[in-house]
Length: 287
Image (cartoon, rainbow, N blue to C red; front, top):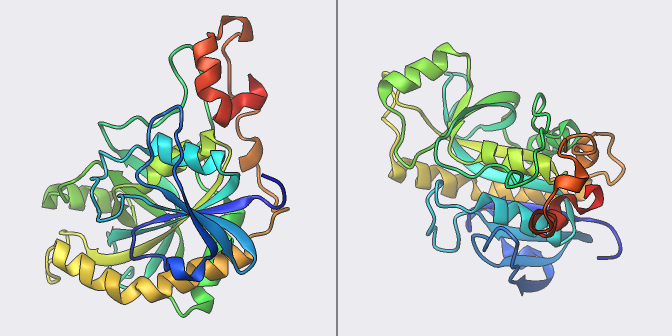
């Protein structure tokens, strides 16, 4: 597409108010990696081109393991996005990260087991750096937007990404605390991995809905508690994402959009045509 690159927004159906998007259009995207979770909604927000996707599908139909993360991220890339802002729920592993606060993850610990979390393989080997797995410029923009909208924001959080869909056992929760992790969720790391391979800047606004089950006095995590607190925070999430979109700097200084320049190590002569076709939306300029 011509003009400025789009900013992608991914979250639950309650996290974003589509009525705020002007020139709203529903678009179905077929990717080489299958179907995304739902249609994308494109338009402009404060004059900035955006694309929104409901991570779990409208009606929350897909569990964290069932989400086709590759298709979701590829779809954003195919729609001309070069930045992806995520909003999600998380549990707290520290007393000071209280429910209704917001964490901005900068690091992840992977506890997933059943997911496709790379675009590569099947004839093409690539090794992306995940030493710093989120975009520092985009994360700073998101944190500043959250503070302006009255949120208590904790930047630089370490996020444990578990498989789910069940919540942690008490022993697991205490183990993650012993590692020094801050929050726990089920989606953000997989998105961050794939966004890096797709050369999309990625940052996440993780709303704390509960203390994970390590806490001796707080009520154990439940769906009812999560939904109630998410409902309370929905307006703040919408305001924060809108403010962040308006503040995204197209000339931001980060390496995300060049992340794969030297990552593909397969001899070009050995790459099969099928892999070139599959990877064209993601890494076509390197193939």
